[in-house]
Image 1 (cartoon, one colour):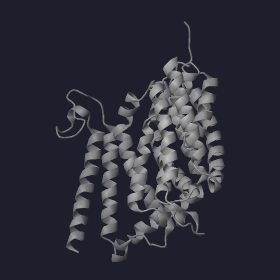
Image 2: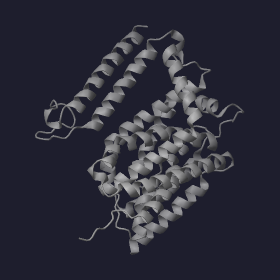
Image 3: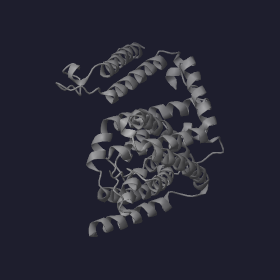
Image 4: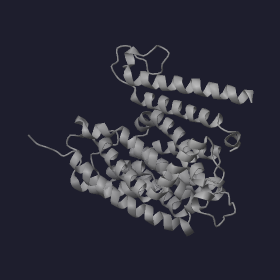
Length: 290
Length: 78
């Protein structure tokens, strides 16, 4: 009997490293995890159950890294939510409480849209060709966000105070709902939320911070929801590579979030817009001619 | 003031109803769901866990809204 591994360990390492970076960089992790195997000629398809199981492990690792990186912020935010529930109101001076509820308000539409549309969108846009086209559009989306961004006056307040003051409930709902676009391979979740943050007047650094905080519960919940598949029969033959992939993903996710929080202190989304447009266009042409 | 109270009542009723719907989704297979529930399917043993989670979370959101709305006036202004 010939035994063929579903995902080999070298593939798991490459995909894990890629997942950690591309989940947090605004360049679409799902798009890259569809396009790269196809470019390298790997027999891995994004709707294969074992590959979804593999992705659950890498996503969970990314969410845990984000949670760890912003741990002290999350402790303050959860305490703020607790204070507001106790007082039955949000004190305007309590930025942690306001930010916490903004994250809740932003997560609800993303969660509901994700639950409702994930399977359908994943099935319809599963091909590398469509992912390449949407990656090109993601580049245009990032460029558009830079072009249309509102330049609100920035103050020397604490990051969270600035975000809490700048983002309204409506903004949080729209930014949260925009995350659902990432269900289409090629569009980036962090790109959509950072772009949304820029449009409502956040600085690049604050938009990135809000995007990462907003991403943590939704990535974690999506992975946790499918965790039984990893430990059930569908995880057979893929748990080892998934663990290796998750460790690689955790490493690059940590490096990526550290890098991006510094990068956006002075830089913009433009390099990512150019990368997505060029890479998307090049792979679109490549898939069209091969 | 009356509108506020009405909103609170509606939010509490909706919240409790949505949480109950969520529990029904978790407890019953698709074939046993009431006909007006999205996802009802004759002969199916599938449990709509995701539908249940969505209904439950919306229910909690409604109850939180009611909690804030019925709080001291300062809270309503925020």
